[in-house]
Amino acid sequence: MRYFIKLAYNGAAYHGWQSQQNAHSVQDELEKCLSLKLKQGIRLSGCGRTDTGVHAREFYAHFDLPMPFVGIESTDFRDKLNIFLPADIVVFEIYAVSTDAHARFDALSRTYEYHIARQKDPFLLQQAYYLFGDLDLSSIRDATSLLFEYTDFSCFTKLHSNTKTNDCTITEAIWIETDEELIFRITANRFLRNMVRAITGTLIEVGQGKLSINEFKEVIESKDRGRAGFSVPAHALYLVEVKYPKELFDSIGRH
Image (cartoon, rainbow, N blue to C red; front, side):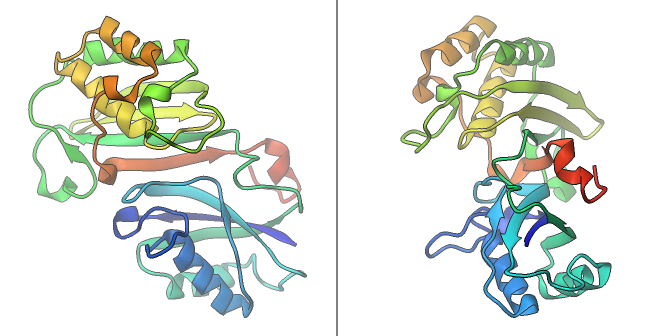
């Protein structure tokens, strides 16, 4: 039996989602609690990675059991699991899927948001990146629109990343204004390591007048990380949505 688990976490205390040697991860915590409750070793496969300090308001993982576990999809099991989990991780739902469903490879898109505080606010200190000074949001939006013209985002990924391709298809990239924040929202079929933080930092430099729109375009075309702007801090980045094919959920009545 294969099960999907829908969860969220505050990543401040973790070295990202994925297990790694000598580092505290969200995956480790969740596997430990699931193994305890199910009385067998559980290994999770996540829908992706998040860097150290990055949060997820929506995240999916899957795991396998040799046979169905009675009550695993119940709210009672979920609530008991949440009691054992740290306060910064919450499970929303567990449900059975087909044995070939995959949390990572079946995902159609992922959406991230980066939150920038518009004024100094001690209550947003750990949730948003406070940036002193005004930004030219019109120029930022003009530069953001250029992202749709490209698929190779080598200039916005960490050097020596072990990926077969740096191609991504961006389907949404917008800036949302609220009284307290500027929010950069971006959706793509896949993301490279550090990609959203590097894009955000480079767009900020456009808004500060350090880069022109044409120079931003040249950065993308250069495929050179050294030409792009700084990476904004991780604590203000959130994975907010992961989309799957509708048919993956049809058999269990969820959408």
